[in-house]
Length: 385
Image (cartoon, rainbow, N blue to C red; front, side, top):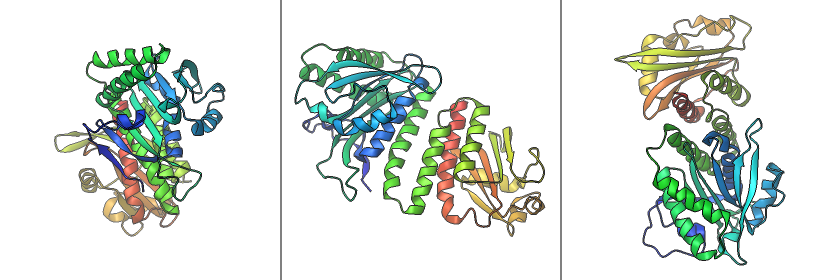
């Protein structure tokens, strides 16, 4: 697996190219596959509308990425390696994005072969820059390695944008919309007050997405399935701000990825030593009971799971130890289940109950992945709050 790490190599002489120079700051740096970077940039661009009506992004794509990007955004026919573009959400359904030319790069300019994305708004800050690695393509000739810089916090993006603006001033003599735009973003970041809670959530989500994309490529076939599931769940629920829609999105994406016959999402808040239930969502796809039927945990086990912050498996033989009404599993023909606490910053804010009519549908090997899913859902709950 390409090693991803936080770089603190300040003082090192800048290498040639924008991405290399940006690596001399405090950012997430490492090697990323081209397809991972493509998916990360596409995610940010399509989600510009979540950054508010004024959210925009400065974008440059190297020649090897342009074709794939055009397939995702047919309106980008004029994309070229000598052009910089400003992207903006067009509003409405479908997350449409407009692309406006923002300047031309001189011949042999180092940025012509590099990826660059910068966006700054109240709820979203991101800087992605990468140059192709000389290490080559590894074992997969169609997916090359890139040395990348990822910055998603306001402080990191402020440092990188200021550095990028200075480099562009010295390397592009003619005035351009891109240079003006960058100067405006530097000013906005310098005058920025306390970042909103959404900024931190975006930052966490994008870092998780970027690094989980890398892990996918190194996984076995079984692991690959789970990383794909986790990425789909993150993309489906990580940005939703409405409680009802969030519950529906969680249920639907878990149904199509993991599969279940019974789901319950229970949100809780700690009050003294007790966990008070603040919201509940059911989905019963068995032929018994209907949507109001509830599989209830024993109070002491419920508290143990919430405090322990680890998923717990349930089958027919262990149901009596965990459930108040274990015979429901028989009535509903449920063979296996998993109870997953939703953990945000080492605190449980809910429970996810999943049950299947298939024996060993959930296994001990699945527990670390369910724990990761629980963290994604917990962060989404905090997002809604």
